[in-house]
Amino acid sequence: MGCWKQEKPNTWAFPTLILCLYGFFYMMKPSEPFLTPYLTGPDKNLTTDEVTNQILPVWTYSYLALLFPVFLLTDYVRYKPVLLLQGISLIVTWLLLLFAHGVLAMQLVEFFYGMVTATEVAYYAYIYSVVSTQHYQRVTSYCRSVTLVAATVAAVLGQLLVSLADVSYFYLNAISLASVSLAFLCAFFLPMPQRSMFFHRKDAPEPVPGPAKGPAVSAARRPSSCQEERSPDPAARAPGPQPRAGNAGPLRHTLSVLLRLGRDLRDCYGSRQLLYWSLWWALATAGFNQVVNYVQVLWDFRAPSHSSAVYNGAVEAIATFLSSVTSFLVQYLKINWDHFGELALGIFSAIDAGCLFLMHFSTSIWACYAGYLIFKACYVLLLTIATESKEANKQMKHHFLCP
Image (cartoon, rainbow, N blue to C red):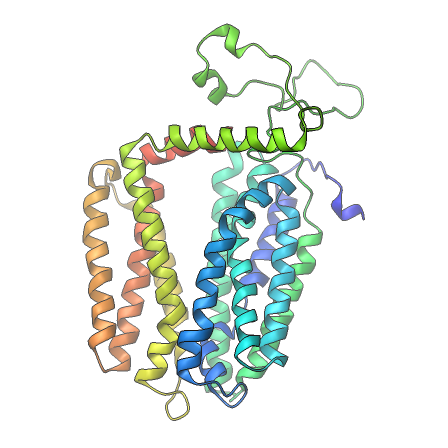
C-alpha cells in the first residue's frame, strides 16, 4: 500500500517521468486508427449502420454526462485515483473489444471509452499539484510531447503491421491492451498529492513532519501573489483560521467548494477576450471530437476496407506530426495574438469548415485524407494560439493555477 502514500521527492523529475511513461503507454494504441474496419470486418461482423447510429453515439453522450462529475471527483480524490480509474476503463475497453460480440457489447465499449476521455483531465491536472510553479511550463511540454510522440508511433506501427506484415486487427487490439495495461501499472507509482485546486487547497494548513530546519517558511503557508492581488487590504491578507472539511461537515464543505468554483468562473470569464476564446474552444473541440469519431466511417464508405487498401494509420501519423509541427512553430511567429488572435481564429476556422465540405462532397478517398490532415493541423494550431494569448493566460493563472 506504499504506493498510496505521499512521496516528498526533492525534485520534480520523478513524478514527471512516471506521468510521461503513463502518457506514452496510454496513447500507444496502434488499433485505434482501424476501429471501424475492425468492427465491420469478420471479427465483429457489424454493419456500417449499426456502427454509425447505435454504437459511436454512445461515446459522445457518455463523455458529456461524465465530464462535470468526473471533474469534481478528480479534484476531491486528488487526481491519482482517477488516473487509476482511467487505466481500469482502458483495460475493460480493450478486453471487450477483443472478446465481446454484438451491438450491446460495443456500446459498453463506447461507454467505458467515454469514461477514459472524461478522466483525461486528471492526467494534465495531476502534475500541477506535485511540482512547483517554476516547472509548470517544462512539465506541461514534456507531457504533451510524449503523448504526441506515442500517438505517432502507434499509428505508424499499426500501418506497418497491417500493410507489410498482414497482421489482423485483432492482434493490433491485443497490442493496445498490453500497452494500456502497462499504463495502469505506471499509475501505481505516482506520488499521491496532498492538495488540489478546490477541495484540498494549498493555503490550507498542512502538518510539517519533523523539526523545522532554519527560518524558512513553507510555501503552502506563505501567502501567494494571487492572494495578495485579490486582497489589497492588509487585514484581509492576514492569516486567519481556516475551516477544515471535518469540522464543517462534508455537505457544507462541498457547497462551499461549489460556491468558490462559481465565483472563480464568474471572475475569470469577466474577460471578454477569454470568454470568446473559451466559447470557440468548447465548440471547436466538440466539433473536432465528432469528426475524429466518425471520420473512419467516411473513409470506409469512400474506400471499403474489405476491398481496398487501408491507410488510416499513415493518415493519423501524418496528421499528428503536422499538428505537432504547427504547434511548435507558433512560438517563433512574432505576432501579438491579443490583437490578431480573433482574426486568425476566423480565418483558420473557415479553412476547417472548407475541409469538412471537401470531405463530404468529394468522392475521392485521397481528398478525404487531405482534408482531414489540414483540418487537424489547423485545429491544433488554433489551440496553440489560444494558449499563447497573454490576456487569457493571465486570467487563467490568476484564478486557477493560484487558488
